Length: 397
Picture 1 (cartoon, rainbow, N blue to C red):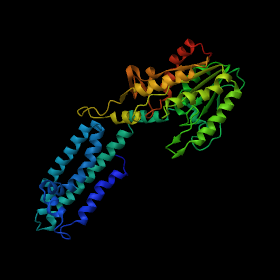
Picture 2: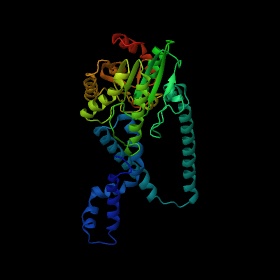
Picture 3: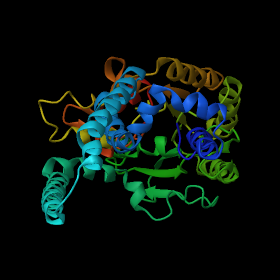
Picture 4: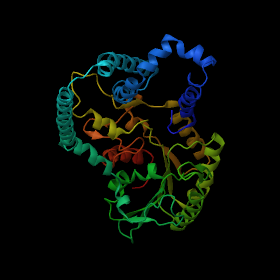
C-alpha cells in the first residue's frame, strides 16, 4: 500500500467514528452497546499503544529479512501483537498501577534507564557509522558512480529538460568510419563495450545520441515522472534521427528499455525509426533491453555486508528472468527488422542473466547499479562477447 493514499483513510475514519460515538456522549448507541463491549475489541484497545510502538520496527526489519510475502507479513503482524501484549502486561500496566511513595525512588530508575538508553544509542550510532564506512560498503557504494563516460560530458543527456539535440563525440573527428549509439539510458549504458572495440581503432569515431526514458521507437507516450505526455522526447527523437541520417554512419546501434507499448506500437514505431536509419546507415543493430532486477541491486548487496551469520540470509540479491515480457519484446523487434536487410537484433539477455536468473553480482563483477541499469565495468567485461556477435554478423569494426 502506498502512503499517503486513499487506503489510509480506513483507519483514520474508523478512529473518527469511535471518537464521535464515545459512550459518554451516546450511551445508547449500537457501537457502545455491542462493539466496544466485546473482549477482543477491549484487548486490542488495551495493547493499542504498545502495538503502535512495536508494529513499525517489526514490519520494517522483519520485511527486510523475510521478504514481503503474505505468509511473512502475517507472521510479523502476529509477532507484533505478541510483543505488544507482553509489553502491556509486563511494562505498561505495572507502571500505571505502581504506587510511588518516594519521588526519589522513582527518579533513580528513570535516570538509570535514560543513561542506559543514551549509551546504547551512542554505541549503535558508532557501529552504524563504522559499518557504513567499511571498505566493503564503500566498494559497493562506489558502484553507483560506475557509469559510462558519456555522463561526465555536460549536456550529453538533458533528460526531459530540453528537446535540443546535443550529440557526444568520442574519437578523432576526422575518422574515416562512424559508429552511432541512439536510444535511452539503457542503450547508452552499452557505450563502454562499443568504445572498447571501436575506439581502439584509429579510423573510427563514436557519436552518442541519448535521452533518458526516451524510446528509440517512434511512439508517443505518457511519462509518469513528469505527469504528462513526453513531447520533449518526440521532438528530440525526430531531430536526432535527422542528424544521424545526415552523418551516414557505418554502424548505428539503437535500443531502449521495455515500455508499455502494444505489439502494434512496438512494430510500427520501430519501423518508423528504421525507415530513417536503415537507408542512411551501413548496418543497424537493435540491442535487446536489459532485464529488470525488480529491486535495487546495490542496496541489496549493501544490506548483506556484515550481516550476522547466525541470522537467516537477508536476501539472495537475485531474481528470475521474466521470459514472457522479454521474449515478446525481442520477438517484436525481430519482426520489425525483417523488411530491412541491414538490420539485426543482438540479444544479450543470457549474458546478463545466465541460467534465466539475474544476479546483482556475478563472480567479481557487480552487475546492476540500480534495478535496471548495468555498471560500466560489467558492460565492458561483455566486450569480448559483443565482438564475437559483431564478427558473426559480419558488421564492420
